[in-house]
Length: 329
Image (cartoon, rainbow, N blue to C red; front, side, top):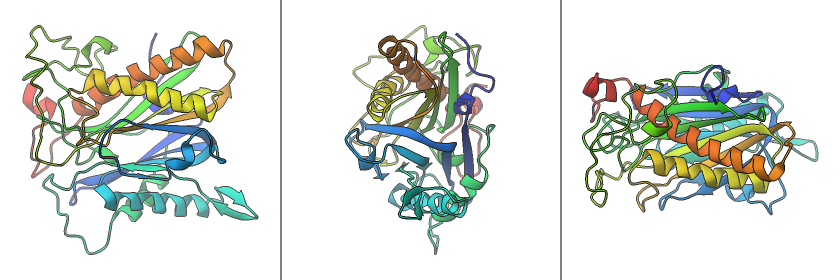
């Protein structure tokens, strides 16, 4: 199986991604929007999450579709990005109709990037502005690496970043992932350069170095424990018809991608979270086997997206950690 045309989550027809960054603050926002509302779910595995409007994504809640999903830096300050996106969507006439009043439904999640060398002494929270800018930039093509919610991200040894990947399944369903990698743990094996995600790499998309030939003691993982600048947040999406419960299952399965690409993952100091989105453009032929394959593909795409985000990261003045490319060429 091969990726879609762009190897991006926007290979799922009807989806767009927008990024906005503030280089002085070393932070940013990424937004996923659809041509129309889409069914969504969420699953949280980390011990320190920061979220907005995730309760309504539970399978027993009334509203099953959302207008956008937001990934943001800034810790709790970054939740204000959702307000900027909601304002922009309302200006577009988007939102859940409540007696003639349009209310955009915009779940959001944040990562902690407040100790990454950027200027955090702002007089006005910048995240609402960044949310609006990211929404305005939404397109089917977008940059990965040190942009959007991955602008100021870090891992245990290297600069983190924003990654994305996709795959087209034999049944015609397209699955994609988008992730901002700011993990407590490491994406590389030992001192590198091999990625933990190497067994799932497609066409040398993150350097083609292959799997590691030597592995350190797995009981002694490399972490940035004590720095309190963690959390990996992501989105998986497909164009199949899925219920809210099935979206939740896809998000749950996709967490395997975190565990394959980051060691350790889902720690008490990470707020690891994955949203799931389904546009409903393609009927499933076999709901049982198709949902299994969609979840499995989502996990693989997520692992690949994590490595791609770190591989694509670029250096900036004041970075506390090197990029993969500076370290390994």
